[in-house]
Length: 452
Image (cartoon, rainbow, N blue to C red; front, top):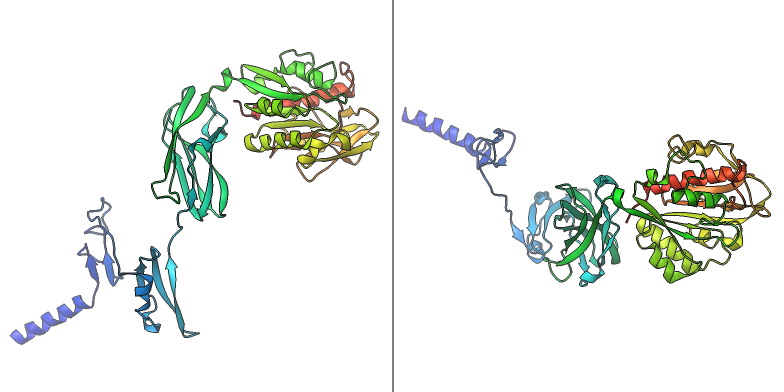
């Protein structure tokens, strides 16, 4: 009898030895050889009652070499302390060779950064706009010394947090832009100081904390929109006379001679619109005027300098502010060339709005100052109408078979290949038609433009 009992016990013991092994659980999964559980009962939906992890053998790269694995060790796994990575031995039976595969995850990028004064805040937070349309951001210039992921953040101030996450894929100087990503309260108006954490850096994992980074919060309804104007020397000007551009200037400043269906302020959503005039090629004045500007209009001018044009281009790229430019010939295309619109002398052919206006309902449709449709004649000015060659944007004005007016919504730029609006525009003729087109364009831009 005792022999039978011993035999039965031995049988049961062997089944346990060669069955499943459970750690932290008495109920290992029947399909696992080893089950390390976070709960005594793995099927439970309650909070874990075990808080620990799995530590496997840890070796340096040199120590790993002494293992000398072969085919039988295919799948052997260790933790490499030299590289902070898991290593798996993979054997290729076809070639009779093996190699270690590193499972590291993405490393953190490292940067050189020492100057908190180099941090720049671009734009303002508009409190009556949703988070998704905010353009304000904090620029942090860094020098990348190691490729990898980054995650920069600020503290939460006035209910708003700024963050930037991504991966450095190139070494050298770069700019990291932190955008508002979280709101915990309704922001108030005013200027609030943030702390920006740049971490890790090449100097250490703790990084650098830059304090007193000022971010302005404004209410669009109480703000003033600023538009910079560079008057044209060759007939086109935003600010004078009764020509097409002049009528639109009057509309922008509250005088509705043009007969628009709505006021300019109803589109800008601001308390006021300010026009700031800058003389051609006055670089210092231009730079000062563009600070806090929502847009700029540049008339047809001979001899726009490369510096003047590039200041406008770089301002547009960094802020998203709009550009409206006239260029009637090669000599007037200094800004157009920089923006990749190439204008040449055209032909004595009127400008006609084409069917592409139907694909731009946000600009030419009901709700805008004028309901513009294709086929509208806007004439031309001077000896002929200029023509545009470009791969940018959408052409909505035909001058013969060529482009006469192109709008690039991705860059907030519109280029007119002719002055169009030169001369009186108080009648209902083509020049008045161009004033209406220009009015619709302005209504679109001032509705979408950032306000500072």
